[in-house]
Image (cartoon, rainbow, N blue to C red):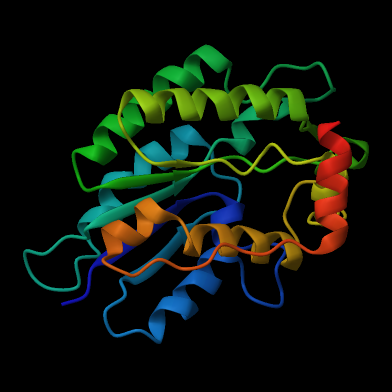
Length: 230
Protein backbone atom coordinates (compact mmCIF):
# COMPACT_ATOMS: atom_id res chain seq x y z
CA UNK A 1 0.00 0.00 0.00
CA UNK A 2 1.28 3.50 -0.76
CA UNK A 3 2.15 5.82 2.07
CA UNK A 4 -0.34 8.49 3.10
CA UNK A 5 0.74 12.09 3.69
CA UNK A 6 -1.64 14.57 5.33
CA UNK A 7 -1.18 18.26 4.54
CA UNK A 8 -2.71 20.36 7.33
CA UNK A 9 -2.84 24.11 7.69
CA UNK A 10 -4.56 27.27 6.52
CA UNK A 11 -5.58 28.75 3.15
CA UNK A 12 -2.04 28.35 1.87
CA UNK A 13 -2.40 24.59 2.20
CA UNK A 14 -5.97 24.71 0.91
CA UNK A 15 -4.75 26.44 -2.27
CA UNK A 16 -6.70 29.70 -2.16
CA UNK A 17 -5.63 32.11 -4.89
CA UNK A 18 -4.63 29.50 -7.49
CA UNK A 19 -7.50 28.95 -9.95
CA UNK A 20 -5.09 27.37 -12.43
CA UNK A 21 -3.65 24.54 -10.36
CA UNK A 22 -5.67 24.46 -7.14
CA UNK A 23 -2.71 25.38 -4.95
CA UNK A 24 0.74 23.93 -4.38
CA UNK A 25 -0.57 20.95 -2.39
CA UNK A 26 -2.98 20.05 -5.20
CA UNK A 27 -0.17 20.45 -7.73
CA UNK A 28 1.95 18.05 -5.67
CA UNK A 29 -0.96 15.60 -5.36
CA UNK A 30 -1.39 15.54 -9.14
CA UNK A 31 2.36 15.27 -9.67
CA UNK A 32 2.59 12.25 -7.40
CA UNK A 33 -0.66 10.63 -8.54
CA UNK A 34 0.90 9.54 -11.84
CA UNK A 35 3.64 7.61 -10.05
CA UNK A 36 2.73 4.20 -8.65
CA UNK A 37 5.31 4.36 -5.88
CA UNK A 38 4.44 7.90 -4.73
CA UNK A 39 2.47 8.68 -1.55
CA UNK A 40 -1.24 9.46 -1.47
CA UNK A 41 -1.64 13.10 -0.46
CA UNK A 42 -4.66 14.43 1.46
CA UNK A 43 -5.26 18.20 1.47
CA UNK A 44 -6.70 19.17 4.86
CA UNK A 45 -6.20 22.92 4.68
CA UNK A 46 -8.88 25.16 6.21
CA UNK A 47 -9.13 28.85 5.37
CA UNK A 48 -8.52 31.07 8.38
CA UNK A 49 -6.97 28.36 10.52
CA UNK A 50 -4.43 29.33 13.12
CA UNK A 51 -2.27 27.30 15.44
CA UNK A 52 -4.94 26.70 18.08
CA UNK A 53 -7.58 25.44 15.64
CA UNK A 54 -5.10 23.17 13.90
CA UNK A 55 -4.04 21.73 17.25
CA UNK A 56 -7.67 20.93 18.03
CA UNK A 57 -8.22 18.92 14.86
CA UNK A 58 -4.83 17.26 14.35
CA UNK A 59 -5.50 13.95 16.08
CA UNK A 60 -8.98 13.50 14.62
CA UNK A 61 -7.85 14.21 11.07
CA UNK A 62 -4.96 11.80 11.46
CA UNK A 63 -6.87 8.88 12.93
CA UNK A 64 -9.50 8.59 10.17
CA UNK A 65 -7.28 8.63 7.08
CA UNK A 66 -5.39 5.37 7.20
CA UNK A 67 -7.74 4.04 4.46
CA UNK A 68 -7.65 0.48 5.84
CA UNK A 69 -8.68 -0.90 9.23
CA UNK A 70 -6.06 -0.43 11.95
CA UNK A 71 -3.97 1.69 9.56
CA UNK A 72 -2.90 5.31 10.01
CA UNK A 73 -1.07 7.76 7.72
CA UNK A 74 2.71 7.68 7.57
CA UNK A 75 3.49 11.40 7.33
CA UNK A 76 2.34 14.93 8.21
CA UNK A 77 3.04 18.12 6.27
CA UNK A 78 2.22 21.29 8.21
CA UNK A 79 1.77 24.85 6.96
CA UNK A 80 0.50 27.13 9.73
CA UNK A 81 1.22 30.41 11.50
CA UNK A 82 0.54 33.27 9.10
CA UNK A 83 -2.94 33.97 10.48
CA UNK A 84 -1.51 34.04 13.99
CA UNK A 85 0.70 37.00 13.02
CA UNK A 86 -2.23 39.25 12.01
CA UNK A 87 -2.85 42.37 14.08
CA UNK A 88 -6.49 43.09 14.82
CA UNK A 89 -8.21 46.44 14.25
CA UNK A 90 -5.16 48.54 13.40
CA UNK A 91 -1.54 48.13 12.20
CA UNK A 92 -0.21 48.18 15.77
CA UNK A 93 -3.08 46.21 17.32
CA UNK A 94 -2.81 43.00 19.27
CA UNK A 95 -1.86 39.89 17.36
CA UNK A 96 -4.13 36.90 16.96
CA UNK A 97 -1.63 34.89 19.01
CA UNK A 98 1.25 36.54 20.83
CA UNK A 99 4.77 35.30 19.98
CA UNK A 100 5.37 33.65 23.36
CA UNK A 101 2.08 31.77 23.18
CA UNK A 102 2.76 30.85 19.56
CA UNK A 103 6.19 29.44 20.42
CA UNK A 104 4.78 27.36 23.26
CA UNK A 105 1.78 26.18 21.25
CA UNK A 106 3.78 25.22 18.20
CA UNK A 107 6.24 23.25 20.30
CA UNK A 108 3.30 21.35 21.85
CA UNK A 109 1.75 20.78 18.42
CA UNK A 110 5.00 19.48 16.99
CA UNK A 111 5.52 17.18 19.95
CA UNK A 112 2.08 15.67 19.39
CA UNK A 113 2.56 15.44 15.63
CA UNK A 114 5.95 13.75 15.94
CA UNK A 115 4.34 11.16 18.17
CA UNK A 116 1.99 10.26 15.30
CA UNK A 117 4.28 10.17 12.24
CA UNK A 118 7.27 11.87 10.58
CA UNK A 119 6.59 15.60 10.22
CA UNK A 120 7.57 18.23 7.63
CA UNK A 121 6.97 21.97 8.10
CA UNK A 122 6.69 24.63 5.40
CA UNK A 123 7.50 28.19 6.44
CA UNK A 124 5.52 31.40 6.04
CA UNK A 125 5.24 33.34 2.80
CA UNK A 126 5.75 37.14 2.78
CA UNK A 127 2.91 39.63 2.33
CA UNK A 128 2.40 42.90 0.45
CA UNK A 129 1.83 45.40 3.24
CA UNK A 130 0.36 48.30 1.15
CA UNK A 131 -2.62 46.05 0.34
CA UNK A 132 -3.60 45.73 4.02
CA UNK A 133 -5.95 45.38 5.79
CA UNK A 134 -7.50 42.03 4.91
CA UNK A 135 -11.27 41.80 5.49
CA UNK A 136 -11.15 45.41 6.65
CA UNK A 137 -9.64 44.60 10.04
CA UNK A 138 -6.53 42.39 9.82
CA UNK A 139 -3.07 43.82 9.25
CA UNK A 140 -0.31 41.40 8.23
CA UNK A 141 3.28 42.67 8.30
CA UNK A 142 6.59 41.23 7.12
CA UNK A 143 8.47 42.01 10.32
CA UNK A 144 5.92 39.98 12.26
CA UNK A 145 6.03 37.26 9.63
CA UNK A 146 9.82 37.10 9.88
CA UNK A 147 9.64 36.72 13.65
CA UNK A 148 7.07 33.93 13.60
CA UNK A 149 8.90 32.17 10.79
CA UNK A 150 12.04 32.14 12.92
CA UNK A 151 10.01 30.67 15.80
CA UNK A 152 8.78 27.89 13.53
CA UNK A 153 12.32 27.13 12.43
CA UNK A 154 13.64 27.27 16.00
CA UNK A 155 11.16 24.64 17.18
CA UNK A 156 11.78 22.48 14.11
CA UNK A 157 15.53 22.51 14.74
CA UNK A 158 15.03 21.61 18.40
CA UNK A 159 12.71 18.73 17.46
CA UNK A 160 14.81 17.68 14.44
CA UNK A 161 11.93 18.25 12.03
CA UNK A 162 12.65 19.25 8.40
CA UNK A 163 11.76 22.90 7.77
CA UNK A 164 11.38 24.48 4.32
CA UNK A 165 11.95 28.23 4.40
CA UNK A 166 10.07 30.31 1.82
CA UNK A 167 11.23 33.76 2.89
CA UNK A 168 14.54 35.47 2.11
CA UNK A 169 14.01 36.72 -1.41
CA UNK A 170 13.46 40.36 -2.38
CA UNK A 171 9.93 41.58 -1.66
CA UNK A 172 9.73 42.84 -5.25
CA UNK A 173 9.83 39.22 -6.35
CA UNK A 174 7.23 38.07 -3.86
CA UNK A 175 4.80 40.87 -4.74
CA UNK A 176 4.35 39.27 -8.16
CA UNK A 177 3.50 35.94 -6.52
CA UNK A 178 0.67 37.38 -4.41
CA UNK A 179 -3.01 38.05 -5.05
CA UNK A 180 -4.46 41.56 -4.96
CA UNK A 181 -5.24 41.13 -1.25
CA UNK A 182 -1.51 41.06 -0.55
CA UNK A 183 -1.82 37.92 1.54
CA UNK A 184 -2.59 34.83 -0.53
CA UNK A 185 -0.28 33.41 -3.17
CA UNK A 186 -1.50 33.62 -6.74
CA UNK A 187 -0.98 30.86 -9.30
CA UNK A 188 2.66 31.90 -9.83
CA UNK A 189 3.26 31.80 -6.08
CA UNK A 190 1.70 28.39 -5.64
CA UNK A 191 3.64 27.10 -8.63
CA UNK A 192 6.90 28.36 -7.12
CA UNK A 193 6.20 26.71 -3.76
CA UNK A 194 5.24 23.47 -5.51
CA UNK A 195 8.58 23.45 -7.32
CA UNK A 196 10.38 23.87 -4.02
CA UNK A 197 8.40 21.17 -2.22
CA UNK A 198 8.58 18.56 -4.98
CA UNK A 199 12.38 18.86 -4.92
CA UNK A 200 12.64 18.91 -1.08
CA UNK A 201 15.31 16.26 -0.33
CA UNK A 202 14.00 15.31 3.12
CA UNK A 203 10.46 14.84 1.81
CA UNK A 204 11.62 12.80 -1.18
CA UNK A 205 13.76 10.64 1.06
CA UNK A 206 10.75 9.92 3.30
CA UNK A 207 8.62 9.16 0.23
CA UNK A 208 11.26 6.81 -1.21
CA UNK A 209 11.37 8.85 -4.42
CA UNK A 210 14.46 9.76 -6.48
CA UNK A 211 15.77 13.35 -6.42
CA UNK A 212 14.01 15.92 -8.57
CA UNK A 213 15.48 19.11 -10.00
CA UNK A 214 14.84 22.34 -8.16
CA UNK A 215 12.86 25.03 -9.97
CA UNK A 216 14.77 27.33 -12.30
CA UNK A 217 14.16 31.01 -11.73
CA UNK A 218 13.34 33.30 -14.64
CA UNK A 219 16.15 35.69 -15.54
CA UNK A 220 14.28 38.75 -14.21
CA UNK A 221 13.93 37.10 -10.79
CA UNK A 222 17.62 36.22 -10.77
CA UNK A 223 18.42 39.85 -11.58
CA UNK A 224 16.22 41.16 -8.76
CA UNK A 225 17.76 38.76 -6.26
CA UNK A 226 21.24 39.86 -7.28
CA UNK A 227 20.30 43.51 -6.84
CA UNK A 228 18.71 42.85 -3.45
CA UNK A 229 21.83 41.10 -2.14
CA UNK A 230 24.11 44.07 -2.90
